Length: 114
Image 1 (cartoon, one colour):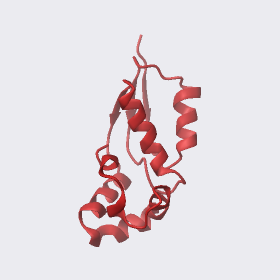
Image 2 (cartoon, rainbow, N blue to C red; image 1 turned 120 degrees about the vertical axis):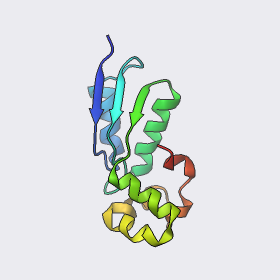
Image 3 (cartoon, rainbow, N blue to C red; image 1 turned 180 degrees about the vertical axis):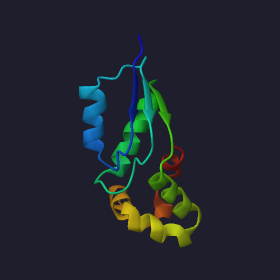
Image 4 (spheres, rainbow, N blue to C red; image 1 turned 90 degrees about the vertical axis):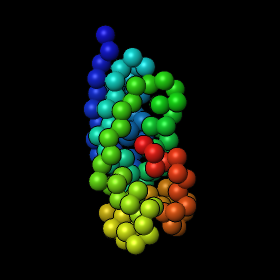
């Protein structure tokens, strides 16, 4: 029987997220994983969180992603540089660091499609 899990507000905590889904929940490909947004900002490894989500999808896990306000701030800053300040003020500096970039426009677009 497939299980269903919902996780919200990961906020760049890749190690915690990875431990939760693989060790604590021990998700299986038959399970449904609902991610409720705010994958980035504040924590030290936003890129790592997004890499885990991409890995899960590419590996056949049933992952459904909703966009949180922090994720939306990134997209808005990417599309309109004048909106970058809001992104930065909400923890975006840590996100840029995790990608080893100094501007939102240097984040690879594959990470914006989640």
